[in-house]
Amino acid sequence: VGANLVTRKWGTDANSAEPYVTGVFFTEWTKIPANITPVMISLGYDGLQPRQIMQVLSALCKSVTIPGRTINKVEMQGLGGLRWSAPGQQDEDNNISMRFSELQDMPSHRIFHAWTRMIRDNRTGLSRLRGPGQYSIGNYSGTVYYWTTNPGGADIQFASCYTGVWPTKDPSDLFGH
Image (cartoon, rainbow, N blue to C red):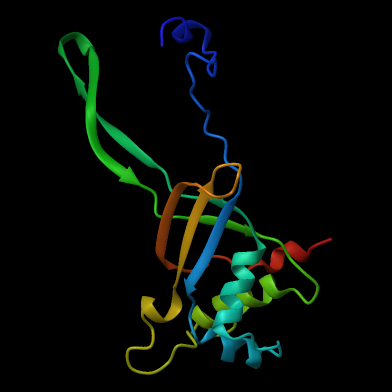
């Protein structure tokens, strides 16, 4: 390590350290609510089957922000008002944010519009998941894998799986001009 502590120059013949440079990221949806298809049809859209929906979402995803973790501190006060702190509990956010490209006939919008209407209809406030036990997270959420690779696209550098994923927004506001 030696002088590199000061210069922060890495990658010489004698001392090699490759920076973390991602090549690309990937998402693969492995579960999507089956009830999205009938809702899409009821809205007058072509009813994509769940497998097609998963493929569209995987192909059109253009950015992902995953949850971070924070160590919260506990602050103490000593005599004379002197303050000091120590590590407290760890807090992990539970939101994943994804952005999607859009294509002609708006498949991204149609999927998320139908998905949010399935969870809660914007006109009635009622869920379209009716019947005993239908309104449960297993019936309105999905599962998505996310991973990044090195620039060559072959070696996975980071990977995670998110379950219980459901949209919090109907993206209709994106069509304003």
